[in-house]
Length: 367
Image (cartoon, rainbow, N blue to C red; front, side):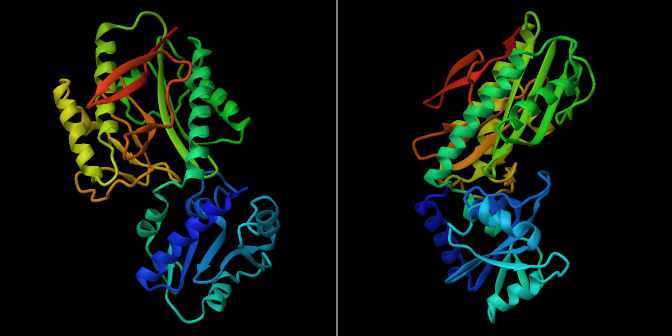
């Protein structure tokens, strides 16, 4: 059940935004924004869809959930929206009355929306910034999720054996996640030479021989964490070990530099310099380096034009890669330094000191 402090904080952010921008109402239809505004609720039927099946409308003095009769009862009974102060506006599924209801509730005045909607100004990027800084309650949920997903993914890899298909291992991870109703938003897996050939390896039916990578974006309560781990059967070649350690160092430079008030592009520039210092100056060009996340898999991927300022308690996942390796975990940016959300739980680890910050990073598991 959502706490009153979280409910009030989100209402405050939205209404300050409405006042500052001269809007009378805000309409949220995207799944990510619904989960944020409803303190972890779910308005989707398909887990891979961006759009939800119900909407919320926030005005200066009231907030509504607008739903057809198919979804309305679950919104109240299971998502707890009445407890959070939402008023229900229900319509028959065979009558598309959402636009009419919004107009009746809004009256005269400007409407902002997170997607194109008749009579509204769609400003999804500005709306997204309202949820970048996690509340204390969200941080607690996020830490639980990071710990749990880290443990499950590592356990699956510890049980992996040569000869298993990539998709077979992914299926076992999906099974473990769904036991706790954790959605697998994105799954990537690669064995042996596929790790070297593809930066975005979707799981295939290729059997594993000696080397395997598993990555996941996993979601619960709308919040998403990202992480990657490796397992090697038999002794790790020295060249691969050197590449992996260099990549972990680059990742730690990214994380150490992720501080509130700094432009995300400045962190990217520091990471690019770290690539050069460890002897791989061109590798950053072969794949995006990650960026901000939270209620989406990436709210933005940092590039050289990114002007976004990092916020306090904003989640980030950097994912530097040097051919054949990748380093990826989720952090919170805080003024005291990065807080690890995903981290090695049962995996072997590497200890690094980077820019005055101590890191415990996952090593390659040797099986």
